[in-house]
Length: 164
Image 1 (cartoon, rainbow, N blue to C red):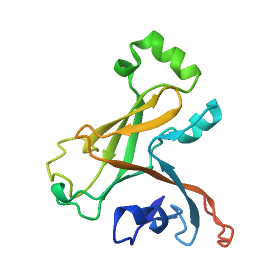
Image 2: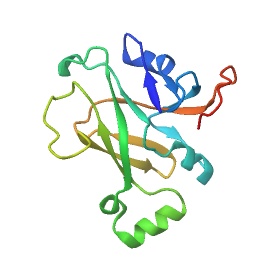
Image 3: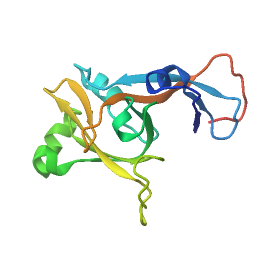
């Protein structure tokens, strides 16, 4: 899966991101926009709003960080946050309800330009369900996250064979 964006600033990333198939570039996918603090009341909605690998995280413009157009990063790994859950037993309970907190490992360019070492990620973000309803993604530096974008269903106008 690959994505292309051509937006001049972060708020427009929502509409400017294009997702393409891994085998056939002509295959385009719908773009799903998941706002930070979106609400979910059922386990099915929580499953839909929970972070996934390949989600694109979108930050608001930040002049003070020399990111006047905003910033994006790709989620490369998602795992349960045992510590934030309060231990293994509590994590199991939360998992049954799809309310478990998670750690998101992200890959990004042009943020603080530090070497990643032997890791395949630059930083770790935290995800939690505030009040059991609100999907909240938190930056450890408290930078404002607009939300996440992910590929949805294949677009109907792209009839391409041999794609996943």
